[in-house]
Image 1 (cartoon, rainbow, N blue to C red):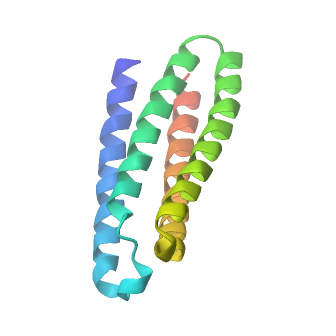
Image 2: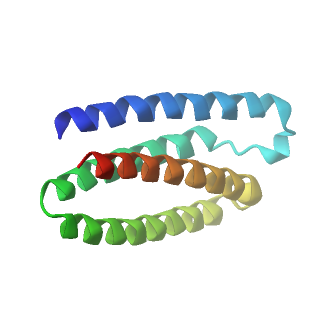
Length: 127
């Protein structure tokens, strides 16, 4: 399990650096009103959630596959609720950044969800 987590960590860091570099480049290409000042924090948030989620998924895979299926469904629900809470809190605090924040958050959400699912499917095939 430890080596699988280290492999995921390495892939996640490379993926995050690529996403971060693209985001940084877009800062210069897009008009200022389309760029959220929280872009870096959103990226760090998704990296943290992905690391924690994958670690817990590996632990549940080590037990029974039915434990993993239950964990997977519950983790998706918890993450969606957490994401909604983060968006609502941020928008309440920084109303002027609503559109850029929501767009950035959504794009990162899609990217990280695809990355996590691909990683979990790869692990499931190996088992």
